[in-house]
Length: 217
Ligand code: G3P
Image 1: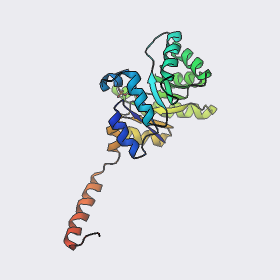
Image 2: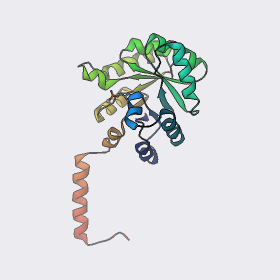
Image 3: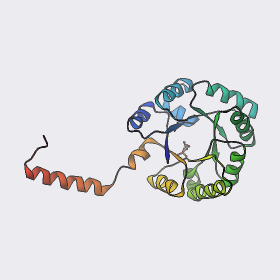
Image 4: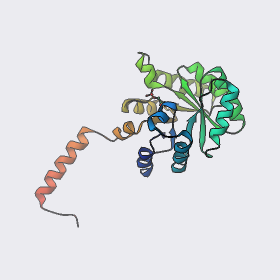
């Protein structure tokens, strides 16, 4: 499973990159706002840090303008994936931009039918939002399973990018279902390393080690 980091926080990306945990990055207008940075500058900095796809999102609503914005964003670096929303215009923009050989991430996906359309429009990635479905008492994880089934039935190559991941269980279940990629905030990725029995075991080992009076030299 590929790990993308869902942030525009360069320091956080750097920390995870040093551990080899970052196969790509996803951003969106809210994350750019949170970073307090200029979109062009921060995206360029991220693209220089990370070899894999870095998603940058268009903000136009109409296909022609989305295509223009997508082409501008793609000029930032070769590893830009242009993020377009799952609207009819977004699908049109996806078709055109993918036809130009660009990576396209179709975002704000909340149904398997939407995902089917994105695959047919040539999306590189489809981003189903798990957490936001859970927020309204729907089953985000079931959506990942439904898309997996539909894509596998027909051999679509669009990669399922499980997004809006809020918990370590979202990450695990996405992996179990077979999402190709997950994008998660840095703190969720770091929490995947935590287990109370690891902490307890380590504490016991260190106490016993102290009693031996030895040192590793
Ligand atoms: O990748 C999409 C993600 O940024 C949305 O997450 O937590 O705002 O629903 P969230």
